[in-house]
Image (cartoon, rainbow, N blue to C red; front, side):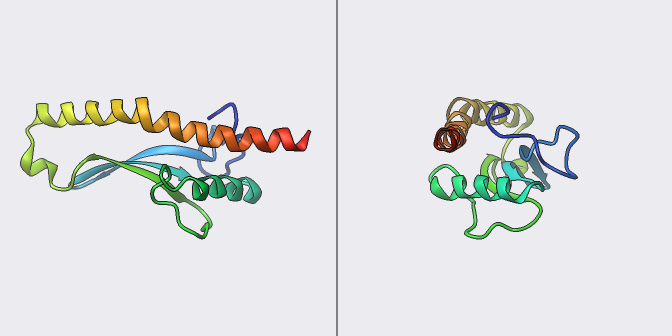
Length: 126
């Protein structure tokens, strides 16, 4: 996504990326989320519109874009209550399995959605 989404985030990361993936390690659950961070309003709105256009991919996008941090995708890596049901090796195995699935399937589709929409905008502007 680095090659198609400009780095214009603000007050979030030194890289100025406006879209980031982050793990949310809760006491009893592990989630992977894609988040639109603070930055240039027009770009944030464009990213939000892409997410709305592909609800089958961006599974937690809201109708309205809030200021600040806006989650648009999540994947459960470890389910609620995993620590009561799984031993350490099973936890590691589940994390590897879910992350491999994310990298082989979801990430490619998410990147393609952004790429298709941003490239079509660039083509129209020429």
